[in-house]
Image 1 (cartoon, rainbow over the protein chains, first blue to last red):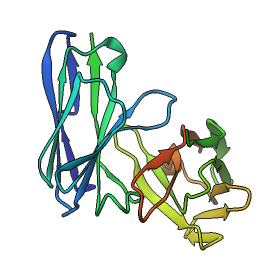
Image 2: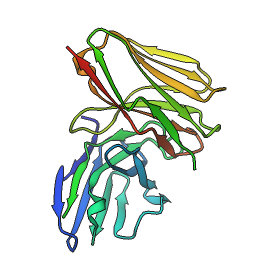
Image 3: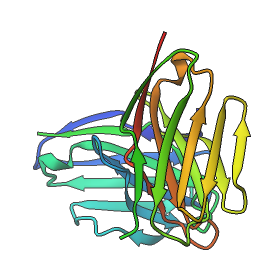
Length: 114
Length: 113
């Protein structure tokens, strides 16, 4: 157990659906992240939250909408996705965003968009 | 933009042999270099890291070396075991003062029994 829990583990959705990914960390960290992992590509940083404030948005399409209601929870709301959005979505946390080197990852949500 | 190159993409070794994975980075301001191991069905897990004021660090069977002048760093696994089979990612970040971690594309290591 890494202390970062993601649900669901697997998700299949159509292009017109709306779904949400959930992440919860039990480590007392102040920063949380969403990463996208596609086959044979480096991890792509999507969003960073520090103390519930979004501090980074890496040119992510608006069909991905993050939400951080408190420092322990992070959501990724999905709507009108495309098949190329199919990937493993990883949540991570770190003690603080200014020391983002040590990342603690969840097991990810494997997303398939049909 | 800044990037991290990682080689090889796939590595197959016999149990008991050593494995070496190499990375180069472009951002000269990088000062923190973690290595992550990702097993099937799990997220990446930090296995060892090194800061720029150190040239080498060892933890049991794994070691990392850093050459800041050449912007190279490497992971060395000795006496490999089947449970070392996984995908390994190198990364570089500015650590304190910056939160962007740039990852390599990963190396899939197979350890044959």
